[in-house]
Amino acid sequence: MDDRILEFIGDLRRAELRVSTTEALDALQASAEVGLADRDTFRAALAATLVKEARDLPAFERLFDLYFFDLKALGAETARAFGRKDPWARALLERLLEDGGALDVDPLTELLLLADPSELEMAIRQGGRGVGLERLFYFLQVGYFSRRIWDQFPWQAIEGDLEALMAAAEAEGMDPGALARLRTYMELRLEAFRRMIRQHVERELGRRGYQHQERMKRELLADKPLFTLSADEVAQMKAVVARLARKIKDALALRRRREEEGKLDPKRTFRASLQYGGVPLELKWRRRHRDKPRLVTLCDVSDSVRNASRFMLQLVWNLQDCFSKVQSFVFVSEIAEVSEAFRALPLERAVEYALGGARVDYHSRSDFGYAFARFTRESLERLDRKTTLLVLGDARNNYNDPQAWALRLMRERVKGIIWLNPEGQWGWGVGDSVMPLYAPSCDVVREVRTLGQLAEVVDGLLQGWWRRRGAIH
Image (cartoon, rainbow, N blue to C red):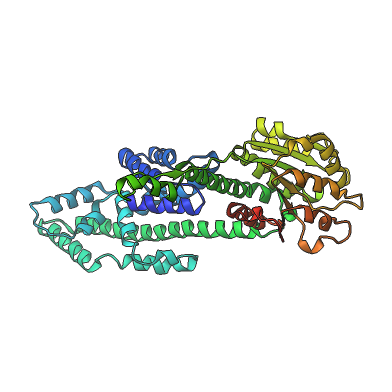
């Protein structure tokens, strides 16, 4: 069972649930304590040790049902597969098998005739380990792999044992009707075992198919332009944005831990070792403390970029605790601050407020120049050299004055400017796009038409390319 739980944990990780080695060991220990008798208790024990966030529960539940569907009793369908219960035949077989050890049968024969469904399922899982189930992806393969698992069992020995049991029963003087009843019981057990093997393969197909479908779905949606996503697809991709934010958090946490530990200082260590004849008995460390950076976001929330704005706002909300201070603004032509809503409200309400409740005329025509100029007049003093300015917008200015001087003035005060444009690069500078006028003031300009491109930006942020002046693509 430990191997099965470890396979389950592997699939959780592939579903992008964070499960550490310590948590995996806790899950193994908890499952050993509670046992498999009560499926709900077993599920609760694994959930308590492996799931840290409520958003991960649906994926956990789906995978748990695929892995441990039958641990309690295989359900009513499998029970029906065993045919009618026959206590008389079972009692007779138990007596024949225990009668002084006169019959030396294979352990699998006894398991097949007397074990409960959960024990038989464990035997099937054991038999399926070497048949290549990792290549199972299509329904037409179910029959092939079912046969391969069936062939893993020593049927020649089992059939010999069954004949020996029938002979022993006949030797006791049983009438033909009783012998026929015993043979029927054995045949029903064999048929039920065959069905269980097929059910096991079908569940494995469901598990692997689920992984494949989920991966394909994420990949397709990640490459789909943001403005074409439906409401259902937007809801599905919330988890993707949360994972991007988690990736940044983990990377920043690792960097802070390394900074706290410090790096070996060779010069100070060598100097300290002179009193010991050059043996470095006292190691000296160089520690560098960095304050958390600050973030200011300016997010275009006009209709043309609404989906992109939604994902960016979700990302910013998730990253608030990574910065010493986060200040968020939304604009169409007027600009309004939504920082307090982001600090006080849960994710969904905060994003909905930014997209429809701020003091902005959401139905007006975009005017980046007016919004930037307004920001410099009212909020320029909020910017300093510890601040990164993140702008999301398509730079479609409706032929208004772009007032590029305002963005240049912001650049003079901040650590860097990152501009994410949800429009294809082919459209920059065409028509009413003023992106070429804003780009020179930015450290980084990236096209983010899809969530896949947003993920690439996150990777770039973690690698630090945005610190290099002139990284504009």
